[in-house]
Length: 298
Ligand code: ADP
Ligand code: MG
Image (tube, rainbow, N blue to C red):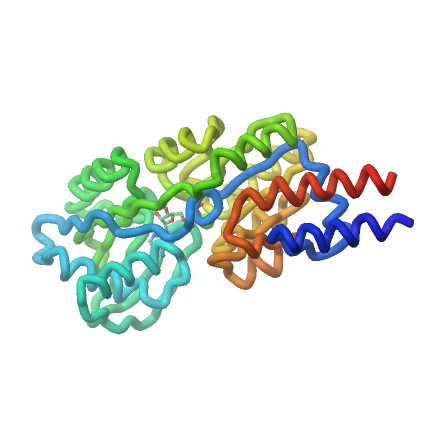
């Protein structure tokens, strides 16, 4: 007689926008005493906008030239930041050039050949660590200025030299603060934020959402390590990720929940449950349904 309450809980969770992949997962959803949240696409809407276009002196590029170059490199990208850059170029009516040899590094950025030149666009901290060209000091200064204003800075390099910095802003989900409070009440512990973004951009969003414990600048494997640290400390961990490059961390958590809105297929496959309605609040709702079903089962 254990199946019916869990099966009806699964159906109920589905009606609330959470697809739970099995009865085992449905049972487990109510257990976690610790929750970790990704930032982009999870705590935020995941549709950032380009707010600043800053060509560096000496690059001989104007704003449009810089944006078009970055958009060329980002065009094949599935990442919300990449989409935002391409979108911004199109809005300005710019022709987005073709890219060859596209490659992306999770948590870092993209590379491609555009018009015969090697273009990279990504995290200033990561890209600048790889090189120490002469434009480096100025580039990090401009990136830092943007980040202090709560922007996600994207550095653009051409043949290894910084040519400009883009600033992007994402909005907190309308239900973020309420959901954080609900998760804290359910688990007895406030959720932690795990993000690949820079700490300066993450801090104001976290504060607004009511999250004090922020771990920023994390690569996908660092998110895995953070989850392992929590499980190693004896916690039953639930992770909510946005689906773009959180697949390893989703797998490392006891329960991985993917936000399906912007979903990358890999994360949807890896996750134990998928939020198909664009609402973060569906997560605590599904956890509460699990608890109720377990009380009926046991
Ligand atoms: P989050 O943990 O907030 O979801 P990600 O791990 O997806 O962030 O990305 C972390 C950082 O990597 C971004 O803040 C950005 O600096 C860089 N990055 C990743 N993908 C791209 C991209 N396509 N274009 C530019 N920067 C990128
Ligand atoms: Mg993400």
